Length: 304
Image 1 (cartoon, rainbow, N blue to C red):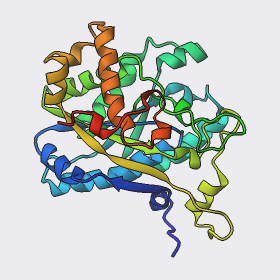
Image 2: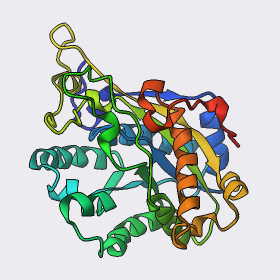
Image 3: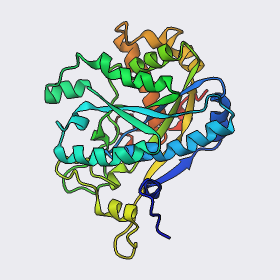
Image 4: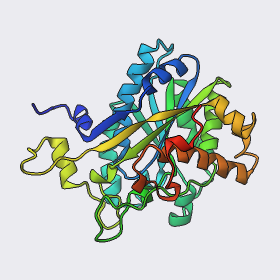
C-alpha cells in the first residue's frame, strides 16, 4: 500500500540500524542528562535521515520517563545554502524538504560557516545573533543536532566514477562543536550532557552532492513517490545509531574545562576533540566512506 502522507513518506527513504544496547543506554542517560546529537555528513538529503531517526529518539525519551520530554531537534545549516549562494536549485530543494522535516520536529536555522566566508565572501559578524533562535529552541526543550564538518565533500565522487565510490569524511576543523556545546550548557544552566554520535551513509543516493549534478536522483524520487520497483529501482540512505559518549568521558580525556577550549583559542586541544568525536562517527559508516578517518573501528575506541 502506498503511503499518501507526504511527511510519512520520508520514512521510505531511510533505513535505521540500531547498534546493540543503544536504546537501553540512551534511556538510561536521558533521564538526568541532555543529549547532543552529532551526525556524519555526506549529502544535502541527510536531514531526512535526522528527521526520521528523530521519531525513534522521541519515543525512547517518552519510554524513559524523561520530564520534560524532548520537544524536537534544532540544527544549524549553512547560511549559504539557505540564502542561495551555493545554488538556486539547491535552495529550492532545501526549502521543499525543510518544510517536510520540520513537520517531523526538525527545525533548521542558517549559520554562516567559515567556509561560507571563504567561498562566498559572507560576513561572520552576525554569528552570535544567528545562534539566538537555536538558543530559544533549546529553551523549549529541543535538543541540538549537527552535521560534523558541515560539508557534503564526503559524499562526492570523481566525475564518471561509481556514485558509491565517494571521497569520504574530511577532517573536521574549527571550534563549531565546542561553540554549540557552550551554548547548550549556558541555556541548560550547566546540567549534564552526553553526545550521541550517529553515522549517516548513502544520502547521495537520494540527491547527488556533486556540483554538476545537484538534482534529486530518479531512484530517490521513485522511492519517495512509491513508483513500482519494476520500473525504477528503489534506494535508501542509512542511519547507523549510535555511540553514546557521556560528558564524564570527555572531561576525563580533555580536562574538566574542556568546553572552554574553543573560546580560549586552544587550537591543538580543539583539533584533538574534533578528531576524537569524528573517529567515533567514522566507526559507524562503511570503511570506504571514512576518508581522513579511515582505518577506524569501534574496537579501536574507548567507549565509556
